[in-house]
Amino acid sequence: MKNVLKWLGIVVGILVGLVVIAAATIYGVTEYRSTRAWNVKVASVTIPTDAASVKWGEHVAVVRGCVDCHGANLGGKIFIEDPAVGRLISVNLTSGKGGIGKTFSDTDLVRAIRHGVDPSGRSVWFMPAQEFYYLSDTDLGALIAYLRSVPPVDNELPKSNLAFLIRTIYLLTGEVALFPAELINHDAPRPVAPPVGVTADYGKYLAVGCTGCHGTGFGGGAIPGAPPSFPPAINITPGGEIQGWSEAGFIKAMRSGVTPGGRQLNNDYMPWKIIGQMTDDELKAVLLYLRSLPKKEQGSR
Image 1 (cartoon, one colour):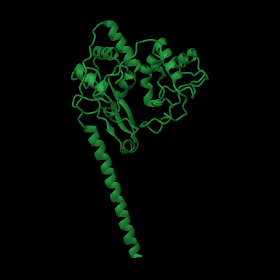
Image 2 (tube, helix red, strand yellow):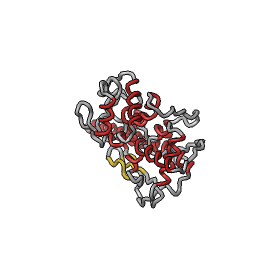
Image 3 (cartoon, rainbow, N blue to C red):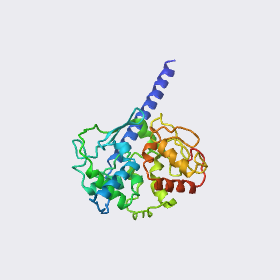
Image 4 (cartoon, one colour):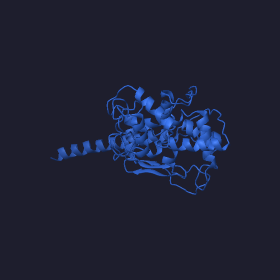
């Protein structure tokens, strides 16, 4: 009996040791990746000063989700605080106390928004720079002009931290966009934005912002990195719920939150109040693009 207990103790000790080693490895690798230095060449972007451009920059900030994450006043907030994910902070973008507006140059903002890299050379956390990478110079310049125009907000926030579970999922699956700088080919030629218009090409340009939840194939499913309480994103290809939606029905759903079938969208998970602020032409273009996609099964992302 003593020998059995002895060997059982050894086995338990080995297992505990392996768990400790695995945990240390996961933490060490994710910390290394979070502090990796990115030497990014930042292309020059003209920042306009006219009122019309600033107004357009506000529109970009709304429909691209900046105000959804950073708050209506762009003063930042605790965006997610969940035991499975950790605490994720959307920074104060203004020039107020605790904000980056006074310390970030225009080049710093271009680098952070387009490349997901902060002035220290490290990747930002969770911000979907891999989506903003496709912003045209016109839209990005207008967006920065708007950021420069907003009133200062005094809001000093704590630092973000990552729970062990999300670190583990990030390493094991590769599906969680913890460090967006890793997801961008920084040396590739700049993507050419399509002309503004009611076209599928322009709809694709706008719909990049939908990929974080619905996936690059728009087939929906569980959202990588989201808290467990988040419902799966729906399939928005012609193989999903939107098949048969009319143009008017799609626009109404994005403006009212009620689908043509009578289902109420939950703005906490599907930000229809943000998307609904697109212009009619923008929404028409998005629908054209979604209709052009191949049919997907729910969950195929």
